[in-house]
Length: 113
Length: 112
Image (cartoon, rainbow over all chains, first blue to last red; front, top):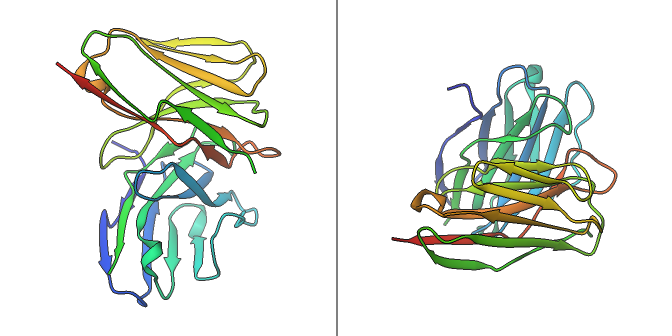
């Protein structure tokens, strides 16, 4: 199917390392979102891209987190100098237009040792 | 900030029973969304509500947008084993149609 695709599905890394998480949105969707879900919790908004507008980074928890979206399609979430509290599932979603129904990928489960 | 509180936190029911769960907020929401998440997967949108008082059904699921715009409920009738999962309510934050605030979730277990 042509749903939201995230990679890797699982990532285990040592504290202090940098990680990159990838999201391929549904083709043609102009809006892309990143969320974080800690164990047993709801989803926490991180960042939102809409077309060519400047991204809304208001949910990023620290300056170690950054994201970019190249060519209005694929997005990469980067976490620098990872800490154990960064361990979570990172979910990406896309919608046809900003504010439209969000379709989620299956997430990347990140574990920091 | 806006928070969404869901109850109950978890439910253990028998196949065939009806289920009711709700979501409340101290702030007004103009849209209410209900998602279901199964293990190892992302949330899937079940029902979207856009108008106070609106009652919407999707198969065995029925959801209502509270008149005060501070609450919503989701009912599942005649539960089946595949209803197992975590149900989240969500709504866009004030001033935006895009950034969603998610509730704490209701975990549903169905026994045969």
